[in-house]
Length: 258
Image 1 (cartoon, one colour):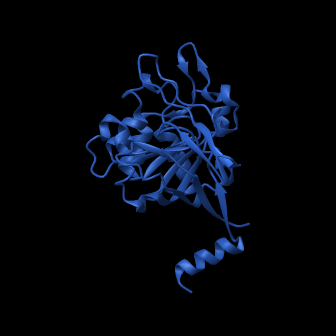
Image 2 (cartoon, helix red, strand yellow):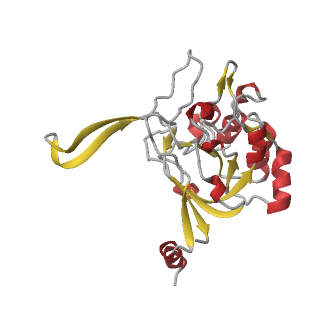
């Protein structure tokens, strides 16, 4: 059999498990809250058009609207000012080869449970690699914190001085980009940066350094506890929005074993 036939048979037989890494798009799902002087992210909104009734007797459908960065979503390079001139940097022009890639899952859930402001640093990644092997070039790095298991209020974790959630510093992002040449960085939190990332140097290092290097981001992931440290393949295909800065999407992972 060809390689693709083997893949198809493995999915059908269940020897390859499909894990859903996506939250359900819902009007109540939290969105990023910016200072009031800036424009805000629109939550998911939905209205019924017809449901087997006088508005349409044989069909059910709805209209929906949301920000490009609502729910589980993809960040393209053009999302950030550092990536505005990256060639093919919007969701409609990105090479789709980048949407299907192996994934490395860095589990720092215990650290995030102990400290909501846990900062992922280069030294943490190197320690992970000593145990699990080097991060292959072109892979996704997924930062497991179990943050997705929180309720809506705890998920944003807003305090008087802003949001508090784990994220990387510049050393971690530079290591992933410059040393390991990852395709992108994915998180369970509302953004790829720490809640207090605006105070880092540079501010918001994940957004600034990832997108400036033409790399991608995934936010609001879930079920990372069902993935191995290495060996999963992630499929993350954003909507093909013209000049899109990002997109809600259905992210799934292929994992060996039933």
